[in-house]
Length: 398
Image 1: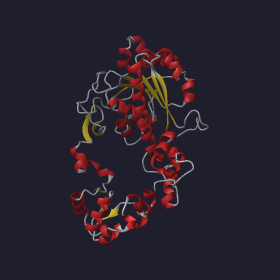
Image 2: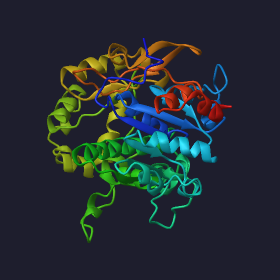
Image 3: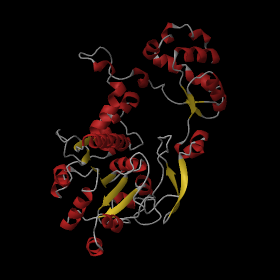
Image 4: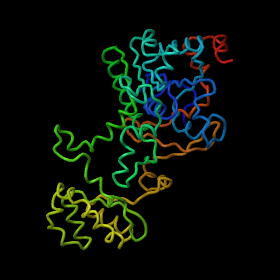
């Protein structure tokens, strides 16, 4: 059963306190990962809460599905940071913390006097991580940025035009989620430096740069060299034939990859004449002729059921997987066995599903130890921990 009261927790980050000044998804998802790992994450929310709390669907006010998902294992404190009293309370909290994570815009932080310099004047060893839309040293520094904007600005949307003649958005808030991973590992590195040297640091994680660098891992390709010595982009990804295939009863991904995989597949599929074809004899040859290679697949794959293909491919160690509808992930035998999605009972919101952190430690994997908090649920508790008496707490909460 999750602990809904104690501030202590186990895990690799047990004993670490993080002040969470984030909103929407990118920042809260990163701080959720840190909370899952055992950090005492104190989420500071404005009166009324993050607007994501009221997204539909929800069973009660301020407890949306989004909020339930990204705010588990945290404590919620409501402070009006535009007031002197609220700001002073945050500074008092910061003095007890190892790190602060924020995705508030730099101008807003300057206006509230909550910049890195402001907070580290009180706590010099603080790790201060600022997540932004665009890097602060570039001309787009002050632009508003949400996932669609970053998909466009980072080159991701344009990649769809390579295949379908028009740019498009991936049906996922991938920019938020990729940036959140960068925030998480950056804060972990900052905490390691803090533990090793006693020194704090300022960290900036821009969404646009995070997604652009992510996109360039394979696509920089021949343009890695100056002057370029080959094509931009990874050619295997640029064929319209790279797609799931219809089997006799559904959809499947079959991806022979090694030389042996392809020889086995040609033999199994009755395409023996291609085993010694120079166009498909090596990985570089297959990439150069990927349209012809992948174009061979559909008629063959449609002759067997998905289950038949999976049996054949597994027997020959050919990479393959059925195409699983995302809504059915919990029913998949593998994800069901590893308990990726578990059901819990929230004290106020009832039965709900929790997607666990996928990483595992032999000493104990990250899990749910605190349900997503109601807005301001822990304000009095946290303030009392840092020495505020009841009168001071009442002055901040009434």
